[in-house]
Image 1: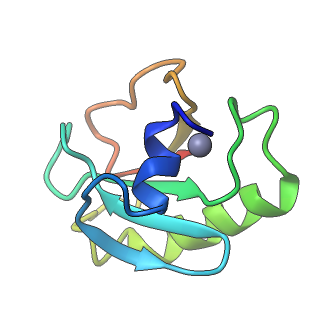
Image 2: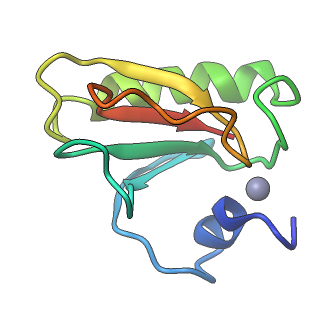
Length: 101
Ligand SMILES: [Zn+2]
C-alpha cells in the first residue's frame, strides 16, 4: 500500500533496524520504544487492521514473536498483539514485542 509505513519498511523504502525476517514476517526495533528491546513484528502481506489479516500470516507473526522475544531483550516474553495501522491502541509499557499488520 502506498501510504503504509510498514509496507515501506518491508520494501526498504524506509530505514529500520531489522532483527528477524522470514517469508511472512519482518521484525525490527520500534523507533519509539516503550521499553528496552521493544520490537515490532509485522506481516509482510498488507492488512489495514488485524481483522483483515490472513489467518496464516497472523499465525506466522505469533511464531515469530515467540522466536524473537528473548533475543530482543524480553525477560517476560510478554507480547502484545494489538497493533494495526493506525494503531488501535498503544502496547502496554511492559510489552517487549508487538505484532502489527
Ligand atoms: Zn502495509
